[in-house]
Structures are given as structure tokens and as C-alpha cells.
Amino acid sequence: MHNRLRRAAGHLREDRGGIAVYTAIVTVALLAIIGLAIDGGGKLRATERADALAMEAARAAGQAIDPASAVTGTDVRVDPEGAQAAAQAYLARAGAQGSATLSADRSRLDVTVHGSYPTVFLAIAGITSLDVTGHGSARMLHGITQPQ
Image 1 (cartoon, rainbow, N blue to C red):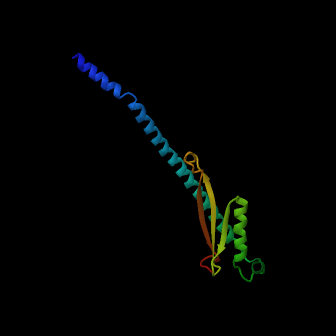
Image 2 (spheres, rainbow, N blue to C red):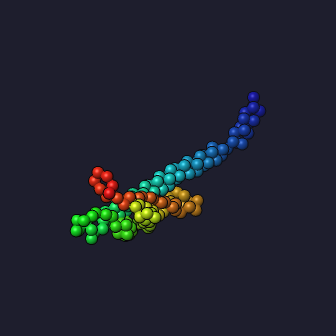
Image 3 (cartoon, rainbow, N blue to C red):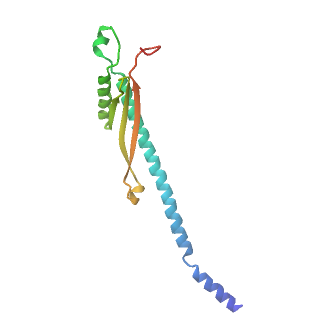
């Protein structure tokens, strides 16, 4: 009986520190999961903001009408170059970097916003920022019941 106790005590000594190693591994894994969730959510919010800025710039572009024909009341039509300038001005006021591009037929304006999200937890792994891009567009049409 005495030998059994000695053998059991020997087995216990071999397992010392096993729980500490397991706890360290699980803690690192949980921190990695939490970090990915925080940085993933942050990138998602930054992308949503870039999309919102691009859509708002496109809306601002849609308000640009040709003033010469509108003032005289002869015609209301969108000024494509003015729309492009209005979108660029909106992006500049918002502090966003991006571009506003007219389609080949000048009936559509596409706005793209580029930015980045500074990471919190991924910076530990050497990833300090994540690129984000937002898109918005506006059709260069006017009219109340149908496009004219």
C-alpha cells in the first residue's frame, strides 16, 4: 500500500504545471478571437462610413444642375462637370480621399472613397491598418414622374 502511494505521488509530480500551460494556451486563443472580433467590427464600421460618404457625395452631385438653362426656365438638366466637381468638393469637406468619375455617356457618376482602419489587436501581429473602400453612384436624370 505504501508503494502505491509513492507511485501515485510520483505521477502527480509529473503533471505539475500542466494546468498552467493549458491556461496560457487558452488565454492566448481567447485574446486572439476577441482581437479579431474587435478589429473585424472596426473595419466593418469604417467600410460603412466610406460607403456613406461616397453615397452622400453622389447625392451632392445629383443636385448640380445647369444654372444657365434653369434660371431662364427653358430646361432643367444636370451639369455633369458640375456634378463631378460637387462630389469632389463634398469629399474634400468631409476629409475623405476618393474620386468621382463620369460614365462614358455622362449619365452616371460613380464615387469611390478610399480609407483605412487603424487596428487595435492586429497591430501586435504587425498589421497596423486595414484598407477600406466605399462606393456610391448617381444617375444624371431629372423629372418628377419619369426621367427627362
